[in-house]
Image 1 (cartoon, helix red, strand yellow):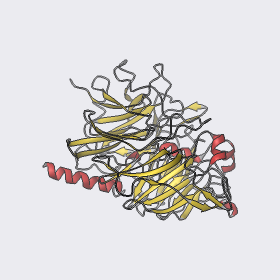
Image 2: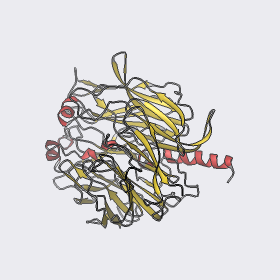
Image 3: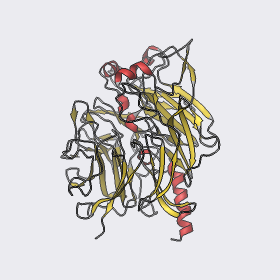
Image 4: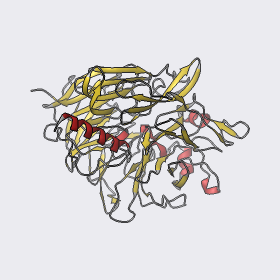
Length: 527
């Protein structure tokens, strides 16, 4: 394949991926193993699968052939998932496969993805220090995973400028880190409401108390940005609301805003770092956290709910568990888990989504009729065979994967088969290792429907105090292929720090952010 054609094909593929125009969970692509990863969990349906990985296989991912290649330190902790663009021309540096890292100190890094060379760095402004009495680890800078479309990256940075807190939307050239026109833009809103923080019947978005943890979504030319209030549950209920914003990706003009609990409190959008999802009709889906719910009483507050939006942020439908009041009272919010949209089914209902929360119930929901609120939940299926979820599920080859956990106990990564529009009641396989809170974000690498590997980053629970990278045979999770503790100190990725780091796998390498803070790169070892 000629270099120019390969570059053009790579850009075309990136544009398709950012637009959600193809599902990476489908047939293997003809492009080589360097698949771009431009958004959280790989695509806008959040399947978490790269089905075009031809280098890493269950045969060569083992302690003898696979391990840590190098690490690169960064300034500030890493919450956000790395992003990856192959075969990119960097002015003054030639053409590279590039991995991007964002930190809690508002630094962006562009590294050569194969040798770790620094291609450019950019600081987006002084970061917000952690608020007093806040239990979240680290400072508040870039938390939510950025998103890339073509040659522009969109990121939200919490800054402190001249003593004034700001939540800023940045649009940057991915080849240089230079800001695009109209960037940065301060995120603001003022809406009608009588809930917490209201003044004279209006609520103003508070840049100090709102936390931009969920990944950004870029769909059909619009950037969607979610927020939840800071910190532990007491502060959460006292300090704010869930918010969703929509911005035109070209002009950064605000297309709309939505507050989850205008006449109450809470309802944060966070999903443990997961992002809103989008379907083929450009409808948007996400779940919310603990807070006021009164829609069943003709109210407009959507705590502990799954909400479906039009592209302009009009509510189209919703689902709220029948025990929402108990969830809210027990800090068991539905919104701790991300939302995954399944491929179109051949059986009815054809359009399904999967999500779960802290209580450990997996909800399989009809996207065309979410079910609203009833004394008996009106959903397709409920499965209670995980402890809880602080991540986004993963889907590959008719299997759903969860690496759950809970505040009061751990859980092992589990696989459930999926057939006829239903998931198996019991796991079809599960790992031997029990992960402590908060479990792990899982992803799958595979070559089409073969050579599937489930990857997970365990946060804590080891004698070394390091995080642990695990690789399992995706067809049988009882078969662990590799973990980073197997080679003594050779492969240790770094000490436990952030709570919800998410790895990516592409082109024979695994990119692992940890709390050191540093980016670790794993791959096949030289022999």
